[in-house]
Length: 257
Image (cartoon, rainbow, N blue to C red; front, side, top):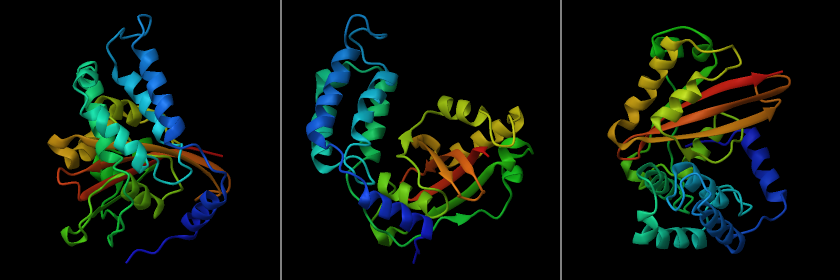
């Protein structure tokens, strides 16, 4: 059975003491306003909604409930109507529709509990990436399988809980494409700029888990006093298997003072 580390307990206490945020009464109008703006003749896609535009609109739901998991039941019900709204879906580009579907699946408004663990992998990141360099030396990797008996699959709550057991309190996970993942892995790390070989190796290693489902998610984090005397920051990438029960998570530190 998992035990919650002290930093996660402190994070939970901070959430409980935080002021209340808005809920669906403000997030839904904010989403609709973003959609209206995205469909204006002067927007980048005109009447067609681009992936970047639907992503911005959906962000309205992530940080508005004052809780840990973002989308609540009222917001979920609204998103269901949008998912089944044929004219709305037809106004999305293919990549935008994929983002909406991935966001909808990930944020199912449930906070299931499951007895499972994210365990450190046996090999070093350099060995798994097939190359040494700044990305490998800045990476921490864990993975785990949610037993079928738990009746739970990976969603927003499960991923955030899993990361919270070995990393700092992070923001919400969001869907990411392979192209975006490549750009993320190519970015600067706390140890320097990654080499092409280790980036390509890391990309292959991460995406091997998601396979045809392309269930790739990422989040960013920052912390003071977490694993270093001062400020640290980074990102985490979660690759989820087709059955949504196996999760491979790569945490990369990008800054430290």
